[in-house]
Image (cartoon, rainbow over all chains, first blue to last red; front, side):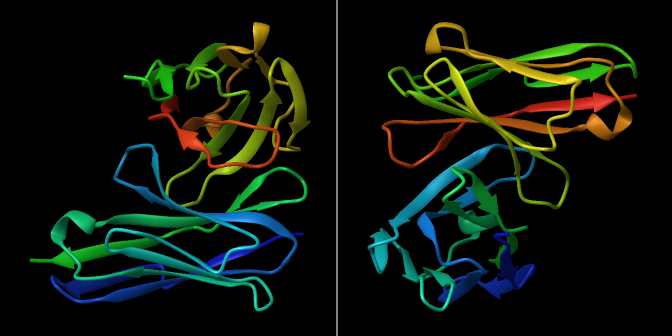
Length: 111
Length: 114
């Protein structure tokens, strides 16, 4: 059974710092991995999608990597800004055609 | 706005009542998913449709839950005889293609059962 874990559960850093969020999964048989952002009480915004054949994807200040063999993905945020404060969730799409989610990392960027 | 829309955004109901939520996916997206999210947790898969066919249902979807997607366009999720444990955010997403693709989410419907 696929399990997705995100560490840390919460992170608070000063504005301007580069930071890394971690996601690990137990079953490497995945189609893709997706990183999302969720603001309080709101829906989910897709940030990056990495196909199983890819190693990384970049969008602006965000870079996501995928290492299927070790069951890990990282989301790198460069030059963090207060507007980046949100909960970041990763989800893997497995052979059962379901997205399996981590519980998220709550990120606070202090001005 | 051409994103995924959900209605209503908030629903407060008394235990035992029936509720129905609607999701309008991005037009031409053939796949539609329903998820449930409780506070502090990631979403949990409930069910998904490819066009009008419901292809997968989670064990979380008890007999009190039913979902439809007539004509492969909008979808409805009905909960009968609501219980306090049904209080959650219900999220809908859509994607395009036959292979797993990027899912785009709606704003969600927050259900509170009193």
